[in-house]
Amino acid sequence: MFGKLFDNLKTGLTKTKNALTDKINETLKLAITIDEDLYEELEEILVMADIGMDTTIDIIERLKDKIRKEKINDPNKVYDTLKEVIKEMLLEGTENIDYEDYNKKVMLIIGVNGAGKTTSIGKLAAKNKNAGKRVLLAAADTFRAAAIDQLEVWSKRAGVDIVKHSEGSDPAAVVFDAISASKARNIDLLICDTAGRLHNKKNLMDELAKIGRILEREYSEAKKETLLVLDGTTGQNAVNQAKQFMEACPIDGIILTKLDGTAKGGVVISIKNTLNIPVRYIGVGEGIDDLQEFNSEEFVEALF
Image (cartoon, rainbow, N blue to C red):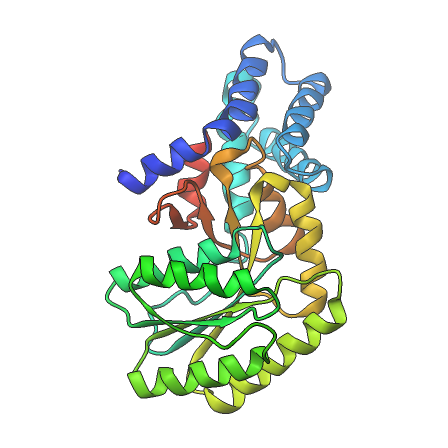
């Protein structure tokens, strides 16, 4: 049913699976009846897997409702019912999202330093180049000298070109030049890195707004997508970070990194339920191919 990517996903989610579904299984095996005590135990397991209190309460309420409606009284059947509830929750509101192939597209990548922003850009570049797209990178995180150097390393690794200026130059000027290069070289996908400064939200807002205006004015024909990179190992802190970035600019999707190194993969469910922003990509390993498009059905299957 599923291929190699699914196997990578399963392997990457091992720690979360041990912390979540294995414990749920153990609890259900010992349960004699479906009662409040059982729901409380399930609630505790979900919270410990970093699904978050609000989302956990929502899941348990939906689970109770489904069990009542379907007249389930065997604890062994709770596992599959819970799986269905989480799958439905992740699919809600995603029906009309347009993930169709594109002719000209710009990805604006935002996120704090250390979340895996540059690595994600490199992996996205490689992924799209391997799919036959002409890709260009714009090093618009000019705030940090290392960011430009790191992006250049990834551009070479992915085999794509990069547009860069010197440290401290105007990020919008980098994007402007990258748009000109995209048009001249008939680029399919332009990926723009941006500065990861949350502590100075006003600067970040102004910077992103300026980049947005230039993209709109100079490259109106391209489809735009703003993706926020979050570190999966930070669990609920990632949700709080996303809320802060949402105040700075509209976000179309999330890239959740480092899920292979954490038992907090449940944060995927929390992000979708709390913020109502789709998770677009997840990182489940170090390799250049380990950034996968998020598929909620596959995610739940791998988790359970």
